[in-house]
Image (tube, rainbow, N blue to C red):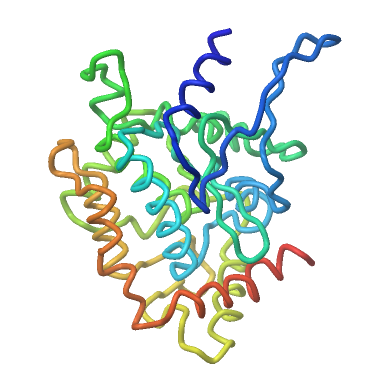
Amino acid sequence: MRLKNELESKNNKLQKDHENLLQVEGFFLDPESCDYCIVMAYAEWGSLQSIMAEHFPLGLPETFISLILRSVLEVVCFLHQRKVFHGDISAGHVYLKSGPNIKMGFGATVYDHGVSNLECSSSCTLPETDISHWAAAPEVYNHEMKNHRSTEESDVWLVGIMALELAYGGIRVPSREALEVMSREIHEKRKLPKRYPPAPQGLDQLQQLTREVEGKGKQIAMEEEDYGDGSSEERSFSREFEKIVADCLAWKPWERPNARTLLKHEFFAVKGIETSELESHFEDVLIDRLRK
């Protein structure tokens, strides 16, 4: 009953829908299994978390990250304008449909069946499926907020955490303390780490994807990105991307920009490229690869 009441409460707070919002459409109790079943729209490619786990273990090209983050921030801005807070922003809660159509789940998430390496890629790292809890904003995780409730500021922190997921294919840290050390360094130095704990596979896939994007002839990809020679698990990022992540991961909540301000961030000004062109390349390169 608690889950039912929570879902009804979240859905009732929204008077209208957003094109990038994937809400719970219904729920019912299965009389045979006594399971509480949740009905959501179908997203044929699943969550970004499952896509990266199976196809892009070292993360996505920065250009694609910009398209995803912009869609997510538009939903977050929509929610915050209505005094609704998400509290569960992560790559596992963002879904991909052809189009491309990027949807952010709200109220409940979908378990990706058949993805065995999502629960925990290593016994030495925290589980990716529970990232919005162990990687929550400091004021939420440390119980400084009354009833540990989410706020606009804590949602923005999670946007920064999700940006790291997309950049590295996940956040592989052994403890909350390690996450805090990393996030403090990112905010203070305004730089992302080049070397990161290794993923199940090497850089070959990411380098190939980058070449495919560059091969489209629009110079959309990442002239500024250097993925190394493939001999080491090292990445570098644009100054704009490092800055937006650092802004989101400010330790003090009042130092974080709101979602509306982030939508105007220079990171989203991708050399004057129209959103329609980015979406076309996203569809042609990333989704086409998923179809193979």
